[in-house]
Length: 448
Image 1 (cartoon, rainbow, N blue to C red):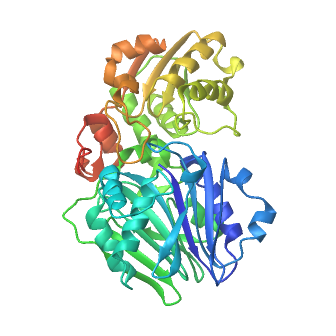
Image 2 (image 1 turned 180 degrees about the horizontal axis):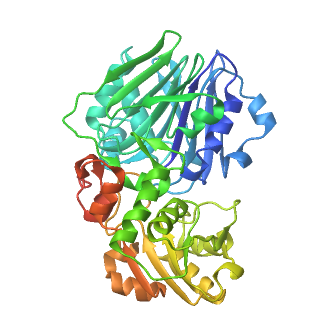
Image 3 (image 1 turned 90 degrees about the vertical axis):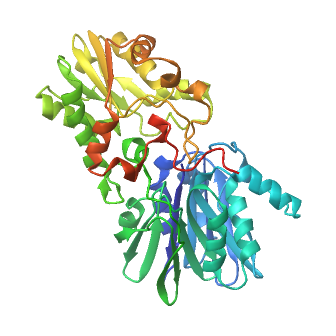
């Protein structure tokens, strides 16, 4: 999971990209980059770290131009290295091209090997470079046709923004695993992973980029084409559970409303007799509000969040995740002392956060700590852009609910049912990818 943005503007875009990328920071804190066409060439700036650390005012002044793309990175399979920071660049028909992607290709390795056999020299270990090379390979003057031919070959999840001279191009995989939305600010056009960048820049989201859709934005306006596929829409349900900002509306579902409904449904499925409902901020706040409202149990913020910390789940190593939990969330003793509480969180993936929080809440004086989780147990690896490639690291793949309860030290533990989760989204289950919960993979992860 990463964050992408593209802007076609009438004025300099570097500052707008900077603020837009900042609003996508929750989707990746490892690295950031932007590429801008200045009228003659594409200029690029990339760096490890947060957006605010990667770019200075001088950097932004050195990136003139009215057309550009940006990327915030969270690594999955390819590792944390400078050379993997996006956007990546190449040449197409004698012109420069920059490309940024949110997703993961399941057939990356076999495609890379084939391209290497044909003489392609890779500069990264990033599957986005495979997409770039395939587009340049198929390009004969028509960028849309080159993308269609590429989409016929690549398998998996991808929401892509590309910069080709005086055009911004965007396309989304036929299943629509990762989100991509379109918006306008006057005559300016913005495409991004979520609606927040569009609104922060001053625009308004107009619609979703549909699964399989290809968008070209240039001086003639917005053109739409489609890659014909028998694939059905399979929006990643974990976007609504965890990744998206609370203010995101993706594929017609608002993340805040979804999470609040999850809390209401979870109270119905797994009530708990306690003194206080406490959220794990930020994504746990709406569900805790829903749980409190449905149960009539008081709501209290018993954890203080360090706003300068990133998300613990997307830290590259377990040691970093352990340290990050302690720095990120601190119990409020005055709120929890002497009380039985139910802690609402969005998920338990490795168990790191839950175990540490329960221990620290008890140290702060909580009498009982129960946990309610607004997603089903994560039992299966994700091959579509989430950092869960190895099932041995997934606590629910190796332990029962009762064993997890004991392992994390909770007085009781319950997860929302898959049916309850889908009901919160008010779509048929067939519209979602739920592979991390049930192992039903829309795209075979062993495909070659």
